[in-house]
Image (tube, rainbow, N blue to C red; front, top):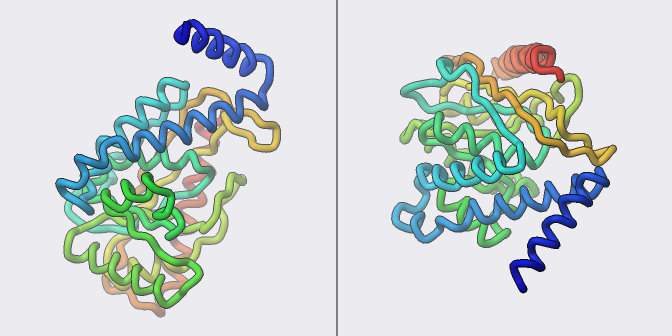
Length: 263
């Protein structure tokens, strides 16, 4: 009887999603959130064997990719030849949606020693926050500049000593316009302090998603890895020119990527 009831509910939900874009929109987001929570927490007992190890993120990333394929959301990484082989880096990505967690799920297996900078509030979303801490996420308090800078300095040390790849969203907020927003200084302070390369990664516009009209269809997204930009020898005085250079490279690449992948 229970299985029959579940089957009826599933059929009813499927029909409602077909008839209503709004129902489909919220249903897919609920599936995404639940899938992310399951993926990020089910392997926690195994993660305790090597806490704070970036490899702890590999199994959650694999499971999230599997969940997303089940609802028709797929990603493809291009430009893998540009990924730095034996160096730490600050990895910069454009930020469009909470769905960017899927981008990290695809980047994690191809960028060894990955590490994410996240706002501290995420840590308290237990048990997901615990899982994120176990795979090495660096949590910063954006409301406390002194503490935030200390955490970023530790991340910079991690780049130097462990050749870590620190992943950041330098626009500072979600944005899905035709061009990127101006980039924040934090990532550049980090790169200059560590004297490490900047690795730009672009994600084409989520053509299958429209929050205003509540459209959330199946879709395929391209993740494009660009050649690294060196910072060795640069100082704080070079920051404005470096920021302009990185922005121009990322913004032009973003526009070209969207032209190639327009559906």
